[in-house]
Every structure is written in C-alpha cells, then in structure tokens.
Length: 525
Image (cartoon, rainbow, N blue to C red):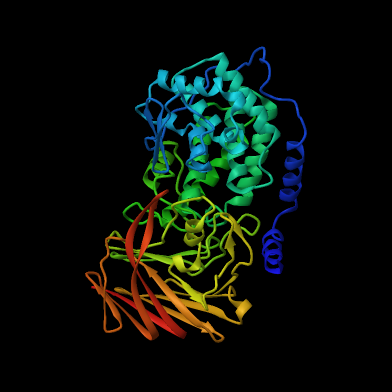
C-alpha cells in the first residue's frame, strides 16, 4: 500500500494546477446532464467563401474499400455497416478509424469520401470515443482539407462540423496538455476559419501561440522528445501555414508569422536527427509509418517556402556524432517534460548507430499503446541501449503512460567527439550512473561507471539484419567487432524488435554484466 501511494505521489506531484483543475471539472461535468449538442438541427451554417488549400502529403493506405480498414497493421472488414465505436482492436485503433486521415489517400474519390463522411454523420449521436476532443481535432482538419480539395459545399457536413467545433471549443484538453492541446488548437483553427467564426479563431490563436512557446525547445525539438510526435506536430504546423498563406486575414497575420518561425526551427531539429538514409531514430514513443517521413516534410516545407533553421542540439538532450560511415545519436537529456512524460521511456543514456547508411544498434521501438506487459517492457530500461543497475528501473515507468520517480541528468562534458554525463536514477539504491561517449574515425568507445557499489547490466540491441557471433569474450560480425574491458559475463540472446504497431521481428542483443566499471569498444572495419 505504501509503495502504491509513493508511486502516485511521485507521479502526480509534477502535474500543473491547470491539469488538476480541468481533470476535476471534466469529471464533474460528465456526471451532470448538460444540454446535448447533437439534438435538433441548426438552422443554417455559413462558411468562408472561396477558401483555398494547396498541396497534400499522401498518407499510408488505411481505407481499403467495401467497409474495410487497416490501422496499426490490423485489418478489419465491417459486415453490417461501419461501427464507429468498434473497440475489439483497442482504443488507438478506434481513434484511427475516427480520425478520417484516410481521406488523404490519393486513390480515394470524392464520392467515396463523401459517403464515409455521411455515414459518420448519420451515426453521430451514438459515437463515443470518436467524439472526444482529440479525434474531433484531427477529423476537423482532414474533413476540411478534403472538402476544399474537392470544392464541396454540403450543408449537412457543415452542420456536423459546427457541432463538433462547439464540442471541441467547450472541452480543450487542458487536463492533458502537450500534443493533445496543440492538436485541439489546430482543429479549432481549421474549423474557425472554415466557418468564419471569429470567437473560435481567437481561441485557436491563443492555444496555438501559448503552446508552441511552451512545447518547442530552444534547439527546435518538440518537448515530448519523440521524433514521431515531432514529425506529426510539424506536419500539422505546415498544414496550418498552408491554410493561412492561401487565405490571408488580419486576424491571423501574427499567428502565421509565429507558425513560420516555429516550423523553421523544428525543421532544423528534424534535420539534425534524421539519418543520411532518411530514417529517424525510434526514441521514446516512436515507430515508423505513423507520421510522414522527413523527406515528405522537408519537401512540403520547401513548397511553402519555409527555410530550415538548424541550431546546435541543446535542450532536447540529443547529441550526434557522425562521419562518412558512422552516424550515432545519444540521449543525455531529461526523459521529457515533468508534467506530461506519458510518451517517455526509462532510457537515459540510450544511443543508436547507423553504419554505412543501414541500421546497426537500434532502439527497440513501440508496438502497442495498450496497458499490458508488452507496453511495460518496451518502456523499460532493459529494452534500451543503456545500463540497468541491480535490476532496478532508472525511471519508474508504469500504467501505460505514467512515470513516477525519474532520472535527472547532469552533463559534465559536451564536446564535438566527447560527451560525458551522470544521472541520479539510482540514488534510491545509493548509486549514480556515469556514461562517457567517445567517437573516433572507425570506433565508438563507451565508458560506464557506477559511482557507489552495484552490479550493472549494459544492453545493446541490434537490427535484425545484423548477425553476431560470440567468441573469446567479444562480439564479431561483418561490421567488425565489439570488445569489453572489466566485464563479468556476456550473453548473446534474441529479442523482439518493434517494426510497427502490433508488429515485431526477432533480432539479437547482447547483455554485459559488470561490476562498477565497463568499457565498450565498437570497432568498424
């Protein structure tokens, strides 16, 4: 009981008062029989005439026709009409169904898209998860882009947009903050401009301006420190720039300028951590094929005439070593924002390497958001290329999206080819972990030091294309070899690398047990 109380205490003490206040308010109002926004018909809804939107990024194909959808690598066909509340594949699958991102598919026709929208509207009164603020926000953006692309004026759709806009305006996600509240702002912006609603537009401007100042760090990173969410937020910013550039208004001039500056800085950070082959590391809650890739984003920004403002990596805690053959990204920063670490992992001093434009040492990625053992494993210290001491977690990740006690980092040295830092995630057992990264022409050297007494296990996760052999206390492969000083034991074993939601592939990893000190030398041919 005491440990549960402590876990909640160390989780909740970081929350902002606004999160607590809105959490209580939304829970209270949910018990009250408030007027139903979906009863009755609105007499008329006026839209902004001649609204323009130019250019689209095609998403992956998720609508397959004949009431068949594929989200998160799970395909489902509805036999008796689409059930927008369908929950058998988890809430994230239901959310994806309700986002309507499939309207961006290049192969979807005007009439097919209209049919899906009208099917939704016909069942609107009984839709549950899809009428939460987050899916409403994304749906408004995708609906409006589709309507503008196809020059559609449809009173029934306009009325639904207005109802959803009122719902979103009354319940922005201040209890969650982070990317959720920003998405609310973008949804309000698209809806407010589409329906020419000045009050909604002002609300959108306030949320977006305030949250971009809060959420974008000085080096251009989104503060949740997930490359995937960084790409998603940047994509939404570029869409907003597109909308405002093509529909100038005195109401939005200042907002447009702020969005352009923010996009420029975010493009710079993305350029910093995108590998030469176009991949981004799957750090924290990140996985491929959810967000548009970096090339699509850079091309979109170029079409909008947004320049890349590349700054030196700093506040995000990520650092990069690179030469013509080796690219290495290290994490020596915070796990994420104190009051919203839901997409953070227990991965302090994690790192990834690409060798000759191919993945070599990788992050294990994510394959689920469900609150289960797989989610717990993928966020754990042991699933990252770092050190676990005495079998304890660096940071107390739990409950799917929660963090209790968390590691704090002090950077001791931060040079071009030499980075050293220490964290206090193990002070509860009387230890600190110090890690030094040294980079040479064909070698990476990692020096781990446990300050205080403790047995450590260093993990190294390899891409499934990398084949390893263990011999004479070292690892060898076609790339070269990995040797260790001061080790106690070395094990070569299999693990499952996430390659997408609900999708894994067997790969190899090594676990090295050591006492107080370990030096790792990765030498490439």
